[in-house]
Image: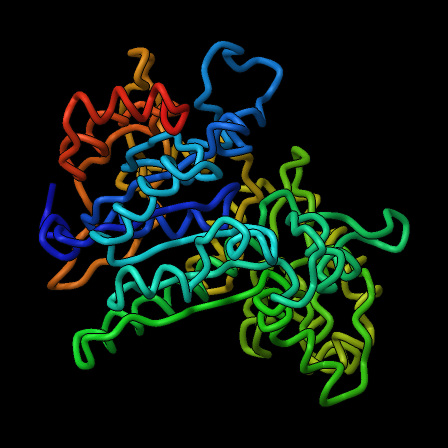
Length: 403
């Protein structure tokens, strides 16, 4: 691995979180060299997403494609923390830990004795992360589709004909993960100065609302409630609109300035359109969007996609091909983001890094261990991390605390 080996090489993160948001944070720390121990509930068979499989996936493997998306570089142990012997395993891990991630339903952490006051009493340097759906006072379960609906994203996505449409990526989970990573990094810096741990909490709901950006501002400033306009942008035209070229290949335009629009018209061979009063300024183009889109669609349907994109690129007009996922991942610039590994059963597996930044101090890691099978690292956690004897491990197994 690269210099990231040393950044968080002494950091221990306990991940008692399921699905995507919390595990995405855990993988972030794993990519920066931390030891991330994924504590999974024996009673539920581990992380829920282990069972979220496509029809063609291996039914005998507990490393689903979904699970693998945010669980590279981690160690897995199954624990029944609802019984005293299992709870003691968690407490012993917390004594050694720097960060504790959890996404229990509101109230469950306290019921299990895993809330911040309890664990702070074990380790006052612990940085505790509490992930909720709607906040501590709201017991509603939080899955991304529900949060996309409740935060307004689904209501803005799609067209009037389609009705509300869910985005195909669990965006709210990822937005929360970014919020929580920022909070935890700040907490680590503060601990360097004070020596004290801290309580960090973030909700899916507030993470989503805080990311409404220009759409929220359209309402708060101008009183405009965003509607479902497909790919069209409410403030800019032509921006986000998809057009078909000669062979039916889709392209998207992102024309943000009047000079870019003039260059677009010249490339399309309709320079007079830039002088048309209906299209001369961005605001007028928004007003006359339908007429503009019809004009552009007619001309672009006569041109080859790649030739058109080359000309637009030469004139510095923002535009791109609408690519399928296999096309995206086949591009040379994606190669540095790809992860290669083997599952516990020896089957090759590929994945994507979650870190893309580079700077003089930190570079992306050269490799990560493949996502672990459920309980694959019991011996590492119990013997190597906690120093338990074989006799004690057998006692825990007999008690049903570990497998």
